[in-house]
Image 1 (tube, helix red, strand yellow):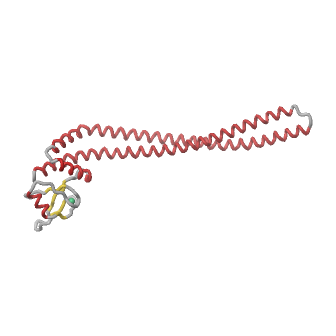
Image 2 (tube, protein in one colour):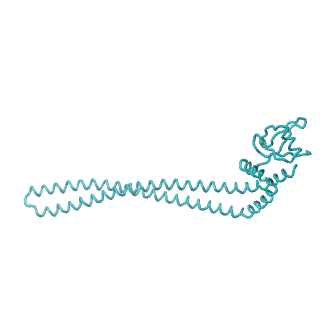
Image 3 (tube, helix red, strand yellow):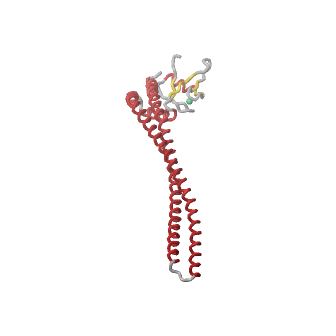
Length: 243
Ligand SMILES: [Zn+2]
């Protein structure tokens, strides 16, 4: 095995440890994101509920103002009763009072209904506020968990990055770029061994994707220290010589 491939194998060892840390953090990051989305959805729902409640409160207020107006009118009519001179006038005003009373009762019962609706909605919103507060607390827990995880990993990650830089320094920059690209695609599993399933046959396969490789690629790997990639999966190939 050539020095370059050896260096790439060292790089992969370090890279796999870095990727493992990144994946452990990413798992919590995804949960934080999901929790944030959940709360945003709750907020939109709450906003809608508050809008509806405000509309009902305005309606209730209008009805209450109406009742107050009618009650004042009844008082005024009653006062007027003291000043009437004829029975007919008296009867007219009494009729007006009775009409107004009947209308007031109707508006009052409507106001009562709306009041119940308003109370119900206020209670619902209070319940949703409590649920939201629990979800926010859960989000804070997850954020703390993520921070702690990052802090725990920070020294090891810094050391690994240092090791990586040291290995990378000895590799051709073009090959490093290729390595990073393949790493991105296969979560750090950049290298694939060339295997020969049947010793009696000159048939070589990529151990990453198990597809057959051209014999000249295997031959090149056995004789020269150069980078060859699998044409199917793109992984960087290596072969154990003398095995
Ligand atoms: Zn392959």
